[in-house]
Image 1 (cartoon, helix red, strand yellow):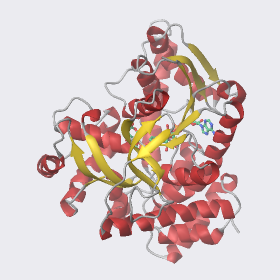
Image 2 (cartoon, rainbow, N blue to C red):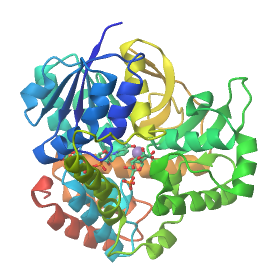
Image 3 (cartoon, protein in one colour):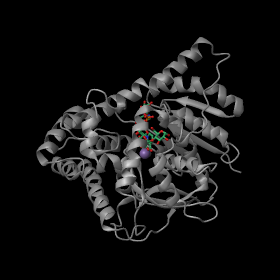
Image 4 (cartoon, rainbow, N blue to C red):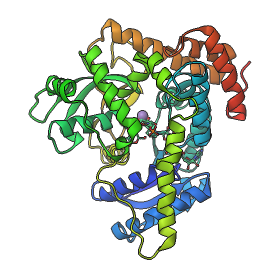
Amino acid sequence: MKKQAVVIAGAGSTHTPGIIQSLLQKKNEFPLRKLVMYDIDSKRVHLVYDIMKQFIYQECPELEVIVTTDKEKAYTDIDFVFAQIRQGGLSMRSADEKIPLRYGVVGQETCGPGGSISYGIRSITGVIELIKDVRRYSPKCWILNYSNPAAVVAEATRREFNNERILNICDMPTAILLSFTKMLGLKNWQELDPCYFGLNHFGWFTELYDKEGVDRLPELREMILEKGMAVSDKHHQDPDWNKTWKQYVDIVKDYPEFLPNSYLQYYLYSKEMAKHMDQNWTRADMVINGREKEMFAEHTKYLENPESYESPIQDFTVFGDFIVDAASSIAYNKGERFLVIVENNGAIPNLPADAMVEVPAYIRSWGPEPISRPAISTFYKGLIENQVASEKLAVDAYYENSYEKALQAIAINKTVPSTTVAKQILDALIEANGDFWPELN
Ligand SMILES: NC(=O)c1ccc[n+]([C@@H]2O[C@H](COP(=O)([O-])OP(=O)(O)OC[C@H]3O[C@@H](n4cnc5c(N)ncnc54)[C@H](O)[C@@H]3O)[C@@H](O)[C@H]2O)c1
Ligand SMILES: O=P(O)(O)OC[C@H]1O[C@H](O[C@H]2[C@H](O)[C@@H](O)[C@@H](O)O[C@@H]2CO)[C@H](O)[C@@H](O)[C@@H]1O
Ligand SMILES: [Mn+2]
């Protein structure tokens, strides 16, 4: 079995311990010859390395590990890049969330004018630069990209690189599947084969087949309506995520036909969601004071006693397991089936061919082979076409340096009530993004 050289780009992320855990727990299915931890922030990446090195050397004493901020060193002689960069850091996430809220519009990662359009235009620059750097040093390498907003980033990488050896992914459907399997008393999320259609953070499960070929969705729908949703991994025990799981039940009550991606709450109830958000304390503040603080506290523990320190290992890490399983399916041509973001090309027959959709695909060494779905009905088609338009207009704004396209992207978005509000938000976002955005004329 060929051994793989993997770079984690953005390895100073709070999610990196989870990826390293999965990589090493799956070392028989996806053997490693080299692990590179690359980041633009030396302090952060070394901090994560300190926390994880005990586990790394316990599991794989012979593994070559490189911790670096040097692109050439990082990207030379590698097979896979797992990208999870955050252009502008959490302080810009905070601005993305707070600015729309000042005008009564939802402020959340990947959603609306801040999380989708502002973050999207900012993120495209970072992700494209990353891919060009990778191609310079390892042209044949596969890039699995988690960097958000995945829908907008995927549209940009489609236009720029035709998504050659690039796979844009999101772990949210997998996290939801993990909740479903827990509710059904199944052992892991791979025990359900989902049928699903939509966009990233904007889709629906239509059937959920178990290994006997029985569709368990009707049973799950009843369980959700009666008992609520189960929490998936440790990450989702967070009080703020718990609100999402409560709200999930309301979505299912109002729209029982299919089981939704939880992110639909921000679009289907956008006014109420915005009303209940605190513009002085958004999700970015919760992450800075929660997950990030915990990571820094772990490092303090490490510094107090490096010799006896043990890396923190979780029960599950959806984020890590999903990306490693997808990479393994590419590396060894396993043809395993995952929900991924691909160019539509008829997978959902009554949506545009060039929309970036999230659907099941068999993951081969030459790339994803999406399955085709039946045509979708009016409600879903209307919602999706509106959201695709907003995402595409954001990418147009980036490539055409166009204020008008950025305004259209915001004004058409379902979370935004009027053009006046759209303009106010756009002007504030231009100011907040400064050099992170291309100049818009
Ligand atoms: N697709 C998904 O489902 C999914 C799930 C979780 C997180 N994410 C995304 O993953 C990214 C990381 O999220 P996080 O919460 O862990 O953020 P984080 O701020 O904790 O970590 C991001 C890291 O990326 C580094 N970085 C920024 N720009 C870089 C660049 N150009 N090259 C290399 N490193 C760079 C930062 O220094 C930081 O260490 C975000 O884009 C987030 O939205 C996506
Ligand atoms: O607000 P955050 O930073 O807690 O979460 C925003 C991200 O949420 C989803 O990803 C989760 C995932 O569902 C969970 O299982 C775990 O692995 O952590 C992930 C990151 O929080 C969503 O899919 C991402 O796109 C969001 O960035
Ligand atoms: Mn996601």
